[in-house]
Amino acid sequence: MKLTHVRVRGYRCVRDTGWFEVEQAKTILLGPNEAGKTAVLEALQQINLPAGVKELDPLRDYPRKHYNAGIQSQKRDPSEIRFASARFRLETDDLTELADGLAATEYCCTRYLDDSFTHDIKGGPEVVVSNEEIRKDLARLAAHVDKSHADAEDVEGEQPPSAALDDIIREWQVGTTLIDQDCREELRSWLDSVIVLVDEGSSTEDARHTPLLEYTHAPEQRKSVLETLESRLPVFV
Image (tube, rainbow, N blue to C red; front, side):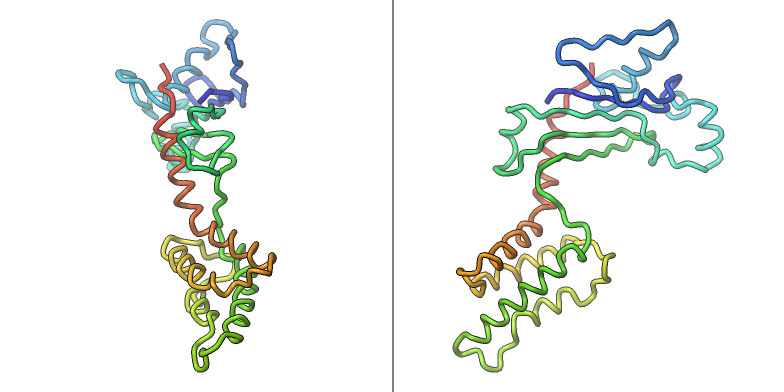
């Protein structure tokens, strides 16, 4: 992967560089002595430290004025203070490590003042964050498979497929419940069970079922992509 953009905030004498581009061939930092050129590079190293380089120390590395006014007074949490962020363009050898159809376009990562690390990708599998995003599609699909179930033979007295779905989503709070792992697994099982009831001639319902099933797999897929890319993150020497 290739580093394309960098931002450093609140590291020693550096207040905020803003996002700046890293050129393909050469990037030159210009400034007088003590302007913070070395501090920018040292902060960037914290994204992925080489052996032998000192780890971040908030007392030493965070501007003392902000440390006293914010952290020491407990007005700010170091886990919420970003100080070094980087964006990478993925290369062919990175993409070949990812599963088919999961090709991300950009990898972004940030190191925080407590030395915690977050990362994300642009592109790749989308993750449903709220039940509200899929509730309507689930209701429409349930109505469709209920009809197919009712038209089938030897189903008298059996519960319609929507009954099992109702058991899954009964505890959902509108717009607030995250699609957690247990719920995804239950939804995945239900969606697998009703696939035979989706009318092959209905492109609408088939197009509704497929994305719903993909949503249940997306968080695991996205996590796998991020783990792979983190393992390929360059060391900043």
